[in-house]
Length: 248
Ligand code: HEM
Image (cartoon, rainbow, N blue to C red; front, side):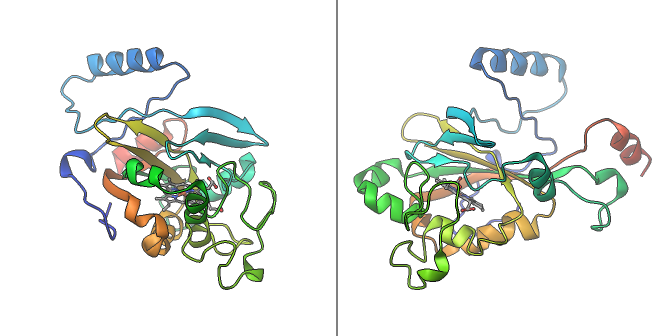
């Protein structure tokens, strides 16, 4: 993963050969699975690990939602159905990737530390103008959560500021960015709290990188410090890819 404007990547928390993500509904089950894996993965060195959680984790109208530590609900901008999710996230035939990679996905993980103390000094109104949505997901121009805002009718950003997160992340409401987000919150104590941002896409340049570059001048940038993470490839289901890779 390259370093983007404002990143301060700690090599001890970045990159790696293999990413293992273990998720579950109960923290105890996840810890047990991690212990079991470490028990059998002898000879492997753990480069870095981070524990995440999704507060108020739920599904509403097909959207996986969770509340982040900055009091906003995330997940509304993701596609609701399986077809659209696959369309954005999975490598397709004919896109220039080897056959074995079709049906797999590029995963981007970013450990983003958030200046929560500074953020909490801002009023809710200011925070909502920085994100470009209300805390509960409604749009600043009054559009309901499940409808599209009318950015074209607000060219100067009077209602939804031009440097707000959603306006820069997805300016063209008819062509949403081709990525699917699924992030976790983390809290390592001593104010080291933030997001284990995670997203999946079929193409890194069109997905994460295009959005990340647009977000460079966002109003939220001064609260964020990306300290780690990496780019990984999630192979397609099944193990046919293993034979293909082994014989390549
Ligand atoms: C700590 C850092 C971040 C926070 C607190 C944050 C928070 C949010 C919130 C509250 C929303 C609105 C609700 C939703 O649609 O999920 C949102 C939307 C979005 N975010 Fe982030 N985000 C962060 C980092 C990122 C990064 C690094 C990217 C990608 C480079 C990104 C891409 C997006 C996209 C594509 C949307 C959907 C925009 C739309 O369709 O309206 N976010 N984010």
